[in-house]
Amino acid sequence: MYETKKRSFSREFKIQICQEGESRLKTQAQASREYMSGSNLISQWMKQYRQNPVNCFPGSRSKQTQTNQEAARTKELEAAFGRATLENQILREANALLKKIEMEENKIKK
Image 1 (cartoon, rainbow, N blue to C red):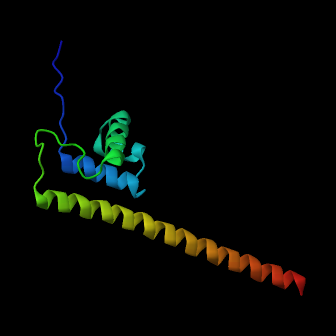
Image 2 (tube, helix red, strand yellow; image 1 turned 90 degrees about the vertical axis):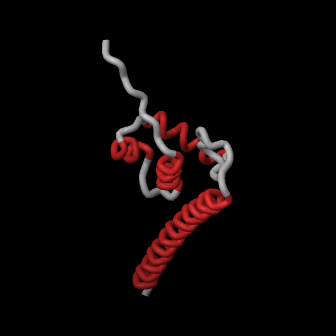
């Protein structure tokens, strides 16, 4: 039999994938295909990330430096900003659609 080598992923890599998923840049299936990892593994990472985005995936480093904590917080805020931007875009498009429908209804009434 052959020996399979277990791959290990850096904390930064896991957080990047989770943030892409949270900001809806990629689905778990897309990330799984792109990074050649199992979708179950990505699901586990997402669950851990959602529970504690700042201190998730500690690995062998149990203590983070202040700089790492700030970087994690910045990434968390960037993900939130990405979600808010996407929501705003959806709302703008919905508003434009509603205005178009109103204009067409007004034309029909005349």
